[in-house]
Amino acid sequence: NKETSSNFIKTIMEEDLRSGKRDAIVTRFPPEPNGYLHIGHAKSIFINFELADQFNGRTNLRFDDTNPLKEDQEFVDSIKEDVKWLGYDWEELHYASNYFEEMYLRAVLLIKKGLAYVEDLSIEEIREYRGTLTEPGKESPSRSRSVEENLDLFERMKNGEFGNGEKVLRAKIDMTSGNMNMRDPVLYRISHTTHHNTGDTWCIYPMYAFAHPLEDAIEGVTHSLCTTEFEEQRPLYNWVVENAEMDTQPQQIEFGRLNLTNTVMSKRKLKQLVEENVIDGWDDPRLPTISGLRRRGFTPESIRNFIRETGVSKGNGAVDKQMLDHFIREDLKLKAPRTMSVIRPLKVVITNYPEGESEMLGAEVNPENPEMGTRQIPFSREIYIEQEDFMEDPPKKYHRLYPGNEVRLKHAYFIKCEDFVKDENGNVVELHCTYDPETKSGSGFTGRKVKGTIHWVDANDSKPAQFRLYDSLILDAEDEEDVDDAQEKTFMDYINPNSLEVLDGFVESNMTGLKPNDKFQFFRHGYFNVDPKYTKGDDLVFNRIVSLKSSFKL
Ligand code: ATP
Ligand code: MG
Ligand code: MG
Image (tube, protein in one colour):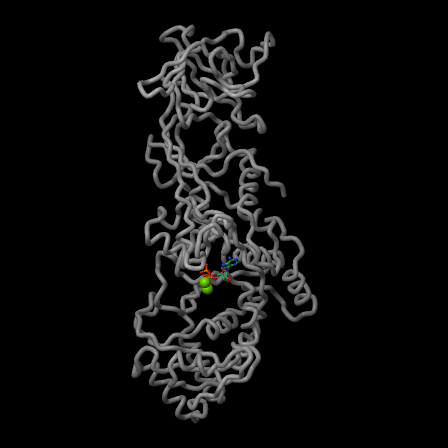
């Protein structure tokens, strides 16, 4: 793996090793198994694994499964698959729920030290008592409970004597702190819910702000990398590690979230799209989920290169999706076989080509990478071209087929349009052309020039295929502003109704033995991926990854 360029986290790690503060770098990727991973998570994965790797350190995969309500085995499995697919191997696999006993004991320790108390106020009351940024909070009557009473009540919470929400455990810190997170935050709450790992053993569950620093410390994580929204929680993170008397002191460091334009990233929104069947599951090729990007045809290399390019800063700006597209084009340029496909077919009869005959034409698999060899393309009297490559009344500068015009068929011959056939609705359904055998591709013919080169497939010897073309799932922000009462709209109102177009056409007959996620460059159409879900045997379904052209510049 190529090194991440110098960045502020790397600098801290280097310094910690040099000064002897740390003798090894240990990081972790800590997803909550409540959804599929998206490209934002890929940034976190990249940073945690690549940085540790540069110092010969270790990275754990830890499921942060302390909330019993939203978690599921399906998500655990998909997360493991996605991390591996991105190219990373974790050192140890952990479940935060395996630390429940230890966390409980640490909470008891805080109570014994007079640093935590059982609260009778409801969550709403706790919020009211907490005050605001400009007003100090008020101390709750529960705050003055004795250690003995707190120990007794906490144990009874654990034993299931109280209902959901009846009591919580709070840290006793400072109700006047300028940092709201330090105003006696909740450490434990009651939830009579079966947990996917611990079953009904527990009915009290630790809050993220208490659990996360303990998890990191238990595993000996040295640098706990998270996104900037946790910056304000850092003092609490340190308070927990110190006062719970953990043996090791991880350092929390925040970096900027990665966001993409014209899509949704939050798990809540992704989940809503899946549950309301707006899309085709978590791996819909329009989604920025890792499984969606994989099904669309993005490669691990392209995603890693994209993330490396976006860098490890504190900024949270949205990155243009076109930058990701740039990296897949770069990755596939030399790897993907080139071939021809016709996605909106128009039949062409080559009237002077002998009936019943055919021939094989040789072509390079990838002119930019000659090592990929050659392929054979059948050619005969009937072919398909794109509908858009013929116009009855062309505008100026249209160099494709029109009555009387001659074009080059890629890898084949010049053909000239002599006539066309319309159906009863006035649509052109067939062209009659002639070809010139002298102009065969590769023959060195220089007699005359044509301005247009078009692609084609043989009509008698080709394979039917479905092509799925995608556009942004979410419309532009500009469109968003045009809508009245924008405040009352949700992201669901900005779903692009034309984000998927499904077309039936043909590919070269030499496309045999295709495997899910094989990738090709179809001449003029762009890069395509064999859809792993809908391709079955000879029923070929291709997802367009990206078109060929872009105005994007790095
Ligand atoms: P979401 O907000 O999409 O639900 P999350 O942050 O709740 O995501 P977690 O499963 O807790 O999801 O995330 C695991 C790790 O990935 C965390 O360390 C989190 O900070 C990081 N992460 C999540 N989203 C992004 C993002 N957009 N950019 C960078 N890192 C992210
Ligand atoms: Mg989270
Ligand atoms: Mg979240």
